[in-house]
Image (cartoon, rainbow, N blue to C red):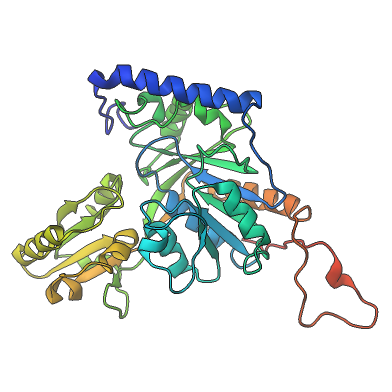
Amino acid sequence: MPAESELITIDKRLLPMSWLYGLGVRFRNKLFDLGVLKSKSYSVPIISVGNITVGGTGKTPHVEYLIELMKDDAQLAVLSRGYKRQTKGYLLADEKSTVADIGDEPYQMKQKYPSVHVAVAEKRCEGIERLTTDEPTKDTDVILLDDAYQHRYVKPGINILLVDYHRLIVYDKMLPAGRLREPVNGKNRADIVIVTKCPQTLNPIDYRVVSKALDLYAYQSLLFSSLDYGELKPFMGGEPRPLNDISGHDVLLLTGIASPQQMENDLSTYDARFTPMTFPDHHDFSEDDVTAINGQFTALPSPKLIITTEKDATRLRCTNGLSEEVKSHLYVLPIRIKFLLNHETTFKNKILSYVRKNSRDSILVKKKDDHKPKDGDHTGNRPRTISFRNN
């Protein structure tokens, strides 16, 4: 069980400012609760994945889990604000989109899942309406909202709240003294709460301790997930290699993510010598950063390699100056999630049940089948339904 202060540092000098910030957030939330500010519902199934803290709780791997769950049976769309992008307004990603256009996380998802509609928009209502009415995307069956827990102008069908195991929200404080975006009772809007980045050795006693601390309502599902990893992919292309190939190597672990601690802990179980090189989340690598990376890697003894995340790799590809030695020894480590304590079935059933129940009421109509029967059989005009295989 994580200690209350394991990764939580509170700047007590800023607590008065946190109180004022919290007052404003509470007032805004109350306006939504009273209906003064309106939350809009949509007939297309919408699943929101987000958090109430600043920093990484594993949103992208969880969104990608949902994509893997449904991509073979439904036309999915991911809608993000596109954090740190250099564009404004609604933008639909295509094969020519860059990190600067749409942001690193949407870019990563579009590269991995080209058949999924990926769009960015500061105003989520506008994004949803464009996705469901514009000609290129009006076949959308399900919309996944990335990092939209505080965007209350949209009322999702399922609201998923992610909480970092190492930084439980009940022990944190509001910005700027702590890292909470809103008061802890904001968790009450969630349908599903997932405690993320758990040790894979989590046991039922830990579950009960965390469950008591979070104090959820009976209608809320509490699930636990941990990080899982794929094979190492060469940055310059080529065949992947198993992660256990790092045995006996010196490894420069290059990360620009918000909370790399659990990843560092997991990889430390391999028989390798690690040198962490960490940057802030969504960090844009500068010329000085690249020089430091080149120098740090050169200083390591052989055999050696560099491991980075998929998100960091998207930004590194837009960076000039990496040495040939670095690029040829640089590997990308896919980060996935897996559910603990047999919670995977519970999660899948909740998601798929919601989508099945709501797809018939969607504003979409069934796509025309190239092989639809002729001569009086008009089944192609029935409302669209989504049929899922047994996942």
